[in-house]
Length: 139
Image (tube, rainbow, N blue to C red; front, side, top):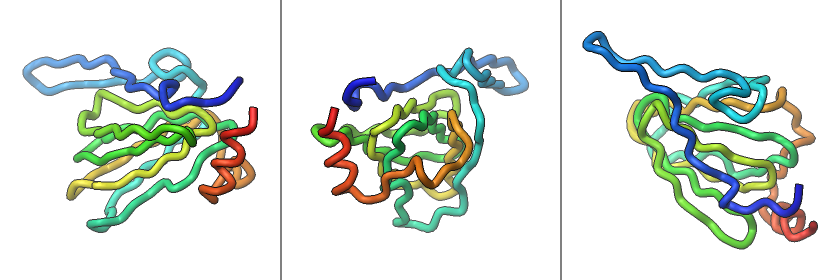
């Protein structure tokens, strides 16, 4: 796969169908996201000032969506960092493997939806930033 860069992470805009009754957005595995969705989870009731993430994945792809409210995601490839502000339920941030992520600045009532390419596996996590930097610099 080569060395991951933050440029591999991008905002995906999902279809939005609106009429006077409201809006509908849909997400389809391998169609509107570039992988088969094997796991879905969401973060909510996040206390003020709390941060989530603080890890990278070796193989896992994710799309992160602000279903309600807003939050910031800092993506880091070990060489460069970039901040993404998510606040629209029809946009998601694609995260590729070997990207460190930190999620914070949650608004009151924020709900963070995560679509993942694999089932949960603790072995796929890199939880130490030092270990991540070492792994990210190794082709």
